[in-house]
Length: 251
Image (cartoon, rainbow, N blue to C red; front, top):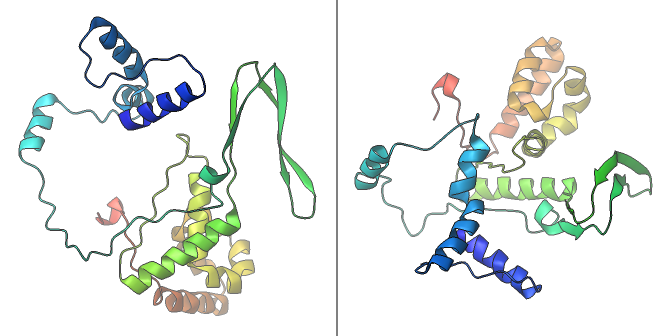
C-alpha cells in the first residue's frame, strides 16, 4: 500500500539510501517517472501477477462502477458493538522477526534448541549469496495457545461470534498448523482426557473438528460415548463460531 511504501522509503532514507520521495501528486516528467518506478511494488500492480494462474479477482470496469453507485446495504453499526479484532502482542512471528544482509556467499543451517539444550536441525545446506537479505522469525506455540484460549473465553463472555483469520505464506504451509492449535485450544479438555484414544483413531486437529467427527463413530461404543459426552459438555461453554460450509449452504 502507499502508506507502507512511504514508510519504507523514509526508513531507507534514514539508513543513508539516496532514493527519492514518493510523489503523491506527480506533475513533472521526473516525478511521473519516479512514481511509475515505485508503482511496480504497489499492491494493485503486484497482486494480479501473484494471482496469475490462481484466481484473478479483477472485475470489469462497468461492474465496478455499478457497485460503487449501488453499494450493498450493510445495515447500521451501533456504537456499543462489541465486535473487535484481536491479535497476539508477543511471542509471534512479528515480535521475533530478524533480518540480516549477508557479506559473502554462505550455507546456512536452521536449528531448534530445546529448553533441555537438545538441538534439532530443521534445515541444512541452505545456500545464500553475498548481498542477499535473510529474514527469519519464530512463533511460540505456548503463547499462541494461551492467546487462543484467552480470546475464546473473551468471545464467550462478551457474546460475540468467534472467527479465526489466518494470513500466512502463499503456499499455506503454516496455516493448517496454526489452525490445528486453535482447534486443540478450543477443545483442550477433549484432547487432555481422550488424547491417546483420538490419536490412535487417527484424529488430527490440523484437519479440524471434521477429523474428530469422522473418526469417533468408529470407536468402541464405550469410548465413543465418553468422547461424545465430553464434546457436548465442551460445546455448551464455547462461543458461537463464524464459519462457511458451502456444502451445507452455510455462508
